Image (cartoon, rainbow, N blue to C red; front, side, top):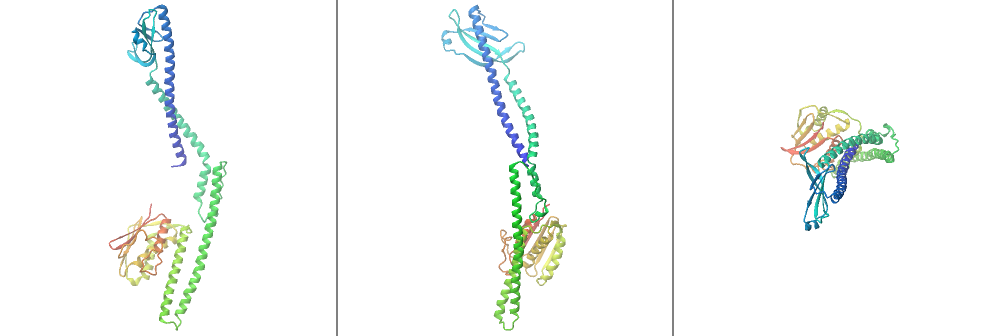
Amino acid sequence: MRLLHYTLSRLTIILFCILSVWAFIFYRFMIDEINDETDNMLSNYKEHILRKFLIQGDDNSMQEQIMGSYKITPIPKDIAKEYSETYIDTVIYVDIESEYEPARALKTTFMGPDEQHYELIVLSSVLEKEDLIETIWWSVLILYIILLISVIWVSEWVLKRSMQPLYRLLQWLSKYTLGKHSLVQPLNNETRIREFSDLNKSISEMTLRNEKIYQSQKQFIGNASHELQTPLAVCINKIELLSEMPECTEKQLSILNDMYETLQRTVRMNKSLLLLSRIENNQFPDTKEISINDNIKLLLQEFSEIYDEKEIIVNIEEKGVLRWLMNETLSSVLLSNLLKNAFVHTPKKGEIKIIISSKKLIVANNGFAKLDENKIFSRFYKDENKKESTGLGLSIVSTIAALYNLNIKYSFHNDMHQFEIAFPK
């Protein structure tokens, strides 16, 4: 959800709650005000009736006038003593409309000149509260809709103008790529809003720091690759020279051979670690559409020649054409490591199955025992019987797959190790 929509939705909920509380308070205030005014009118009407009764001696028990109606009824003295003046809501029958209408009544007692106690009931018509409630709620609803539309329109206009610096910053960040800072236009995002100004400054400083760290790390990787490869190559050459000396005994040759294999494994490990570091630092930004089918066929020719003595049967099934946008070098590394893993770990006269569809690549090879699914893509996880292995091949495959949002998983069934790479849409 966008920030603008999120803010407007919260404003809508808050406005609804505020207007609902306001409507209830307004309704209670209106009802109390109407009752108060009606009670004052009834009180005045009562005073008028009592003066008329005491002065004129009016003995009509029931009277209807413009102001309302009243009823005077004689009551015993003991009841009159316990009587208290009260205001109540009631109904009266209206002959003209032939129905009952809401009314407000005042009940009280008084004593006449003849010392007789009387009950006085004064009635006055009032507004129907149901109609009042309906009117108030309709008014609130109309007010709410108008206010909501106005607030949404005004808020959207104000927020959009206020958020322009943020949108410009996000647009600039979407174009920014680590290592290509010079290719991106400098951040020009002037604003009078202090928070956005501080954010622009922090982002600019952060990108500059990242560029410096990136360049420093890139330089270190290059230097490490050069500085380490040279002494390793020198050591390997000197071991080869020592092994060619006639005075070397068989035991010494065996030791030299172990040293040679260890150094060769160190060279491969060094190259693999440097490659992993470069991948994780996104130093392969260039991409193009790669044909996985064609790359697989080319690599199979090379590996079939290298591992010809193992007499491995390779079956490839093409169910579709698989193309993917990625770096050409990394695509070769991904596929070659996957295929090399299959050739290296397949027993002699074993079988490798490759299935290619438009969305999936499956490489399966014969095996004897299931590997640990939680560790197989970890660095330095390898078969202890394969001393020449660095344990980094599948880790590199996993890293490249993660870089391009590919889903890779391992399974073992029918005595075959299976690696499946799913290419999303």
